[in-house]
Amino acid sequence: MIDVSPKFNTLRYAMAKGTLVARAETIDRVIDRTVPKGDVLEVARAAGINAAKRCADWMVFCHNLPLDWIDLKFEFEEDRIKVFAEAKAIWKTGVEMEALAAVTGALLNMYDMLKPLDEDLSIGQIKLVKKKGGKSDFRDGFAESLKTAVLVISDSTFAGEREDKSGKIIQKFLEDQPVEVAFYEVLPDEQEQISARLSELADREQVDLIFTTGGTGPGPRDVTPEATRRVIEKEFPGIAEAIRRHGKERTPYAMLSRELSGTRGQCLIINLPGSSKGALESMQALFPGLLHIFPMMRGGGH
Image (cartoon, rainbow, N blue to C red; front, side):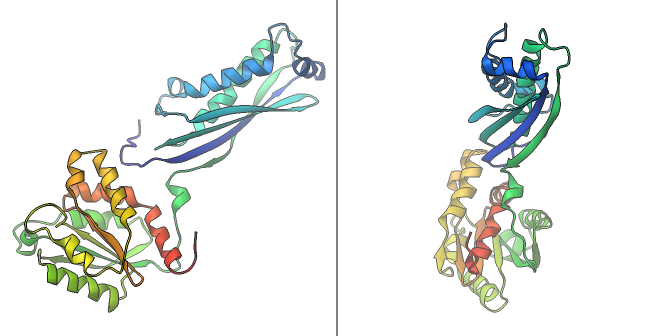
């Protein structure tokens, strides 16, 4: 199976369809509910719902996901019945296979109930009609890459006593994003120095996005949030909340972190934890939706 643990939940939607082809008189009996085995549409609807709920039992690499909604509808033509299935879930993976399984389950049951009446039955044309949700729905494009800075805040790394890992992880993650890392620097845990550099990057260097990593815990030298608060003009608490919520689902220690996020002019500043694992998980929690703030700040709205 694919490891989806780094992903975050979004509302997922999918619609699939398929077709049963039969003689016109067979279609009429389905509509009139005179099929000997019972009400074809009601059985097909129930079978489709059950198939969607048990999709992971059929598909080897499908995850068991909590379906929030599944329903089926039917459209009639002279010689065919079109089956449509829709599915929703708030989860880490899509519901395309669940919708396709629902259509397949419904069609197979319709075929079984109608085969004594019609030797010319056929089912098929099963396909995905549409899907929504997931990271691809939340990506923003930019004419020019966003100018970005990564600041590693650590006394020991600044002194050359420890190798930086979290800053390099952030840089690696950003390679797949529409940004250009123009600055990568290491600073000591000195509040005045951190504040001054953040201001310079935002004001003089016209950086769009700044990530700091380190100095967000309860330690006596952890002053990155205090330094950031002195610089920002608007706080965006939802960004830090997303980081901590995502982290808390993976380790209880995430609740002890004090990340702060906000803007200075047109620059967004985000504190990340200093651990390499925490930094990576924070980036996974924020992207790609984070970058939508830039078209909004530039007057583009939603």
